[in-house]
Image (cartoon, rainbow, N blue to C red; front, side, top):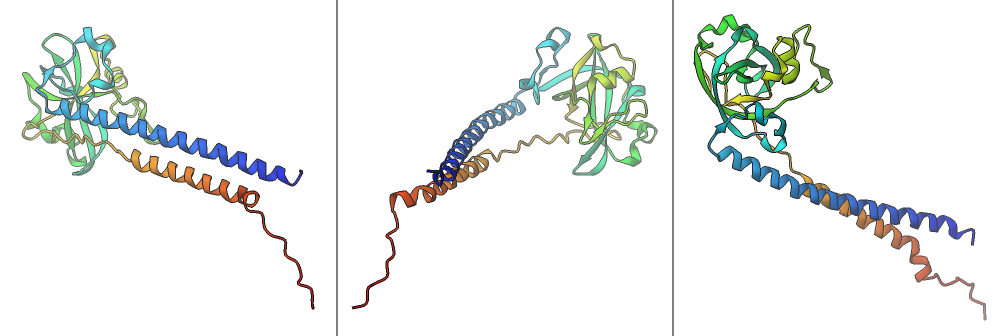
Length: 246
């Protein structure tokens, strides 16, 4: 009986592994269903006509479903308060130019005006692309990116920004939090001589089916392992004997 315990333990482990792999495979299929629905929703929002950017009364209800919604807003830029956040685009490394826009209704929203390379980081190098007066902006609503980038935290004191953290940027410029939208807008077009807009990349990684098949494959291997463990009980070996000499 003692000799059977290691086999029982191995079978129990394989059974748990099978159940675990099956659960992980099913979870990946659920994630795939969710991801496909997300992609369908975002594509529909990208094709829809722009709506007015959410005003203060709607800020508390903004969530993930609102990201990448096409919105429009009008106001005046406060160029003296622009912020550059680290960016890597198809045009190479540089920064996104985030500028507060005071809307005609009296509240403020950060506009990601677009990309500039290191040589144009200084606003003085693109003075012709800093519009005065009331401007109309069409773009994509984006949610704040708190804390910083991968392994790098924002440093407001030194002016080093690795993510578009709306509350932190607003606080660094002394903007009242209750009047600043909790989101920012990626501008969909450029002003001649200004940052290059319209570079937002909307792409969702969707390999959940591959992951599911991998987990199910491991579950099948667990079953095969269990078969090899119990096979001797189903097909006992015949004892070998020495043939007697005549």
